[in-house]
Length: 215
Image (tube, rainbow, N blue to C red; front, side, top):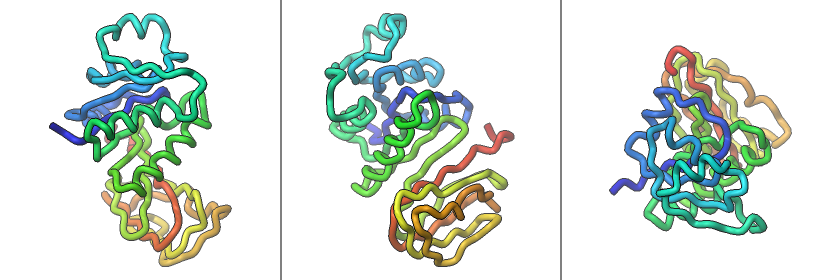
């Protein structure tokens, strides 16, 4: 049984062939309104989790046969966090967060990036993908991220960065230290089919676009 789980979250997605390919073969768990992504992605979640304060009645009716875990609205963890923890209890080691970027709640997108950094630091393979953008936590050491030539990418900092190098980019960097408030790592472009980021210390996420001709 696979240890790769797709976690369906409430942010917007574009059910492109690239996204459908990414979730193919994954086990899946939906968090509240994230269940709306199941049908476009041809997924049947094995669990639906949350407080169900944002799931519309028709969604609840259409997926009445999916096993549910219900939590109170007043709680100290998000529905997405609960869904990730449920996946880990079921053996997840690789996590794909779908619907984690964009959508009506910017604070939710920020929380998902923070969660990605947390679980990556704990040893889980994790990425966020909505069909057009992918986000990958960057760990100290060497990080290799596939990208289409010409794809736009940025490195979002959550800390001061030490010893940052970027190869495979239109504007490479060599062993630089950057404070948190620097925007030097915004709006770069992939020069080939792989971006290589080396980092000595600090927390960051690489956000890369899917090239339109490859969607």
